[in-house]
Image 1 (cartoon, rainbow, N blue to C red):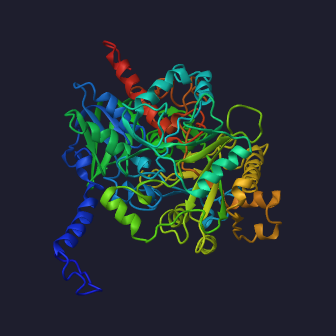
Image 2 (image 1 turned 180 degrees about the vertical axis):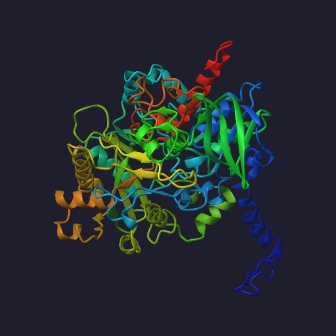
Image 3 (image 1 turned 90 degrees about the vertical axis):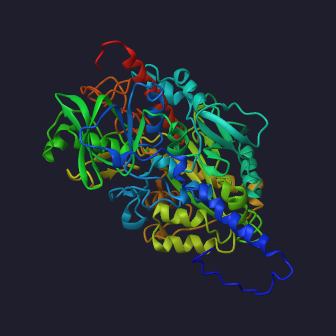
Length: 617
């Protein structure tokens, strides 16, 4: 207690009461925070021990959703030395607390990217830019996301295979998902999820009144509830499993790398920035890194695996001379291999229709300190989970297929919410006027953001280099709502109209839902809730669900694709990419679980390839 400045507002109240019990409570609360951001849960930092020309068998660049799975698979061979390089450090304590899922954005753990202004999207956000958070931390974006475990659906992977990628159809990848799943805690008696895999999962079912009403509202509209997401029959609503263990986030740095931290052939270098790949005669020999003010060359005797994500992976390849010839030459970069790196950028565009509810729609704690007490003493209660953010729907607004084209998420906030609402305001980069409207509307009433997620965008963007300085962020052109036939906008309008029908169901109406109107000079001129208004609203306030993908696509034709079906970069030896960037098209759902699958499959493919005698890849 030394150094604490505590004020006793009620002196004498402990008379006749064993003071030791009171201080036991305080000590228990203080001790309970020690497991958060605990270095003991992670591998030791090998970065300070690196020297110029150090050799490893494999170097994995990036420790996000995929990289740790690559390293986990490769280090199963005790004869291979595997180095994982991460630009950030151990995640902050806030990232470990599930209810603070969005609060880590725009901190030191976030690359804090912004998209380039354009006339089609993000017009109502700060500086007319969408905020694209990406994890700069051990565990990558698995430390920033909403922890939802979603596989996508069968058609996603079958289409990958049909594009010329054998081994990536649903029948071949489903087993990798099963090997990821370690369901520890569940509110359901039965679930098809695995229980012996690598990633700890928790499956909860919220009993909040409005959540139950939303579920019933979907059923009124013919969308049935399912115990678990079914990739072969995905239409429906479901309470998803989350990557949470005993009330704490299970990020991949902690859960995957931490589980093998004692393997003597695993080396993890934190706060180490990869500037470029070292390539000679189209053969990758290692990486150039910056650490503690020094520049080191690190050698990979077998391969470098780039798992830096859909933004940083193409940036690193282009800085190293792999990318669109004209773009690289304009920047004075020597072209090693002309490939469509950075092209076909896809992301899940969302709109948030905010709704104010009646007072008892979301149950608030009796006292503001109750959730803190429950969490820090027992890892239970409001803060230990994600409320009903894990409740989602998969729907087809066109009713033309058994496959969904939209996913609904629901972001609840209690009256005067101090957790989810403010973090969303900051993360989305709403302008000050919009934040005031959202906060004022939800000051005395609970609210819920009805989130429409476009699963299969027709529009695509591009990642380009801004400069040849590796520390300068790349240029991100999100490409939202730019498809020539305007199909994405039409689909978004259909999804918003579906949400309006949800609000009009008997189940939902009892909460007296009232759509909150944002203000913008352009949209204010239009009739509220008309097609023209919702189109304006989408262009101004539509934003990302944090799922950038497909910038180093997998496929056989190097005119259109960057890596082959074994994730080897076309025309460059000993170099692979394994992360969301290799998806030929983004999956129909949250991307964390598919990225883990890609990492696990990649690691095992690499091990298989190098098990062949006397074969240089």
